[in-house]
Image (cartoon, rainbow, N blue to C red; front, top):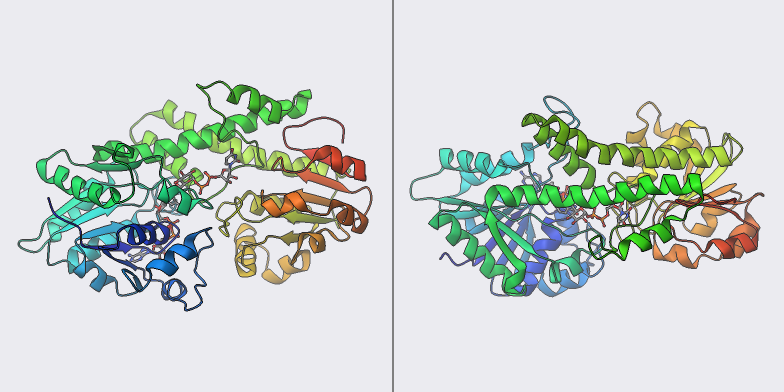
Length: 469
Ligand SMILES: NC(=O)c1ccc[n+]([C@@H]2O[C@H](COP(=O)([O-])OP(=O)(O)OC[C@H]3O[C@@H](n4cnc5c(N)ncnc54)[C@H](O)[C@@H]3O)[C@@H](O)[C@H]2O)c1
Ligand SMILES: O=c1ccn([C@@H]2O[C@H](COP(=O)(O)OP(=O)(O)O[C@H]3O[C@H](CO)[C@@H](O)[C@H](O)[C@H]3O)[C@@H](O)[C@H]2O)c(=O)[nH]1
């Protein structure tokens, strides 16, 4: 069995960075180099004050312990490839924006470029591990590219090792994963390569949590896991609409059904809609795969999960407008939270972006506060969401504030878009004093104590609760 001494990870993003930093920490005998074409990102990973490019609880501590010891960050992709005996491909696989499959298929250009680079540079045998989330059978395309371009006496074994970490809990998830999934060809060489990667994980993951399967099952399991998780959220959000219309309470409904051990209590939190770089992209990927396989009904089934999510976001912004007497023109709305979930600075597909765009279209004034998201990121997301508006126009309507209290000053309504823990301890009495009356709170994250806020004088609307404000 080949022994892994040197690992290279292509892609220093949300997955490559934390994943390989943890491998370096847990495997001091392995030299891990994370490479990326993006100089600014690598500089941030190497920054002397550990101002890392990603905010993730516990990540700085891991990087402090391993960087310079057996963990390195570099833009020298070729050297990283050349030296490694195992290479993770952890590049982005966004939804295609143009061409065949635009809007649903995964853009595999980055995976292909990285694969071609490996083929061009490698002069010794490598295990190439697909870490990015990809459609079923991508490993086959990678194998064909590598074999067609390989040098004499150089062999490539391809593995699929999808990542299941969630942002905000990435380090916790990597330290104690529910499972590590490794797919390989069921040949003796494929199984040997698989065992070599298993050995790496065995340094800290119990053996019974390391699952070895066929390549295609591994690739499909990743898409399936995200589709099932997102489907739960769309299901609970669909029920939240029924709650609002009937007077049932979604918290009580979620708790009641979650007690059934066959259903389970996790991932049943109604919200303003799921966001993040993965759920929508991966479901659309599954939809495209189903369509390409002529499985029209299967494609329609999964597509509905995304449709419901869009509906939930729209339903929420419409509720804000309807409640504020059918017009928000010229009214100030404080949006608390811009990240797609708590404990991350990531804003990809964040529901807050859609809400703010809807408020802008109604010509409201919007104050935003988020404890982690960079201001430049907010401006770039809002510009992308409203391509017909210049940044100057957007900035006449939208302000970024440095605290929740500041954002709420002179506002008519507060909208909670992200479940940051600090929003649970807001001094609502002071917020109320600074707002125009009647003062409204729209809780899209089931976060506030409704009775307490009503006692102060607020009118409170909560997702999945339809009682009078
Ligand atoms: N973000 C998550 O929580 C998460 C979790 C599990 C799986 N995934 C999957 O992992 C993959 C990576 O996601 P991410 O969030 O880390 O993306 P990301 O955009 O944060 O990082 C990808 C990095 O790859 C680099 N890159 C692209 N092509 C390159 C090349 N040819 N050579 C060197 N560097 C290159 C980019 O510059 C970028 O820094 C995706 O397929 C995603 O679906 C993401
Ligand atoms: O009960 C819930 C749980 C989550 N969410 C929302 O769903 C989105 C996604 O949350 P989460 O899954 O926690 O974060 P991600 O980082 O997107 O992680 C998902 O996507 C990753 C990328 O593929 C996978 O690796 C993870 O296993 C999978 O959980 C966020 O907007 C959450 O606010 C809800 O609305 N209700």
